Image (tube, helix red, strand yellow):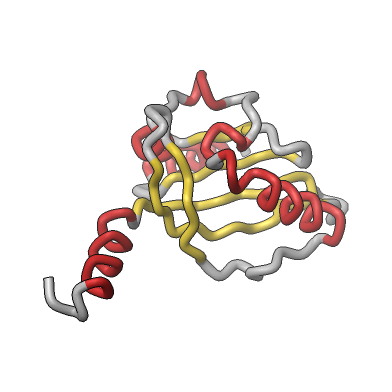
Length: 138
């Protein structure tokens, strides 16, 4: 079992996408190396912090309404489908990330937190917006 746990930790740390696990109260308990690279916060800075760390202030109320509803109902609105959303990095720069969420349950089936996997799509979104403004010609 110890070997399997060590392998799981290496897989999570070596993922190309950011992986964040937050408990039921929204405190970050797992933050992989790709999350460090994407958001600029080290694991030491992120662990124990609330998810507000990467949520732009104007989106926080909506985020927490959805988060609390998912914790209470045991389902997510997107049912695992990825969505593009805004986040913010350590420097305050706003990013677009494609993110998917899943609820994590304990052995009894009780929701104990949520895991998110994210990748930076800022360049793609900005290019699409520029093309839309210029009628498809850039």
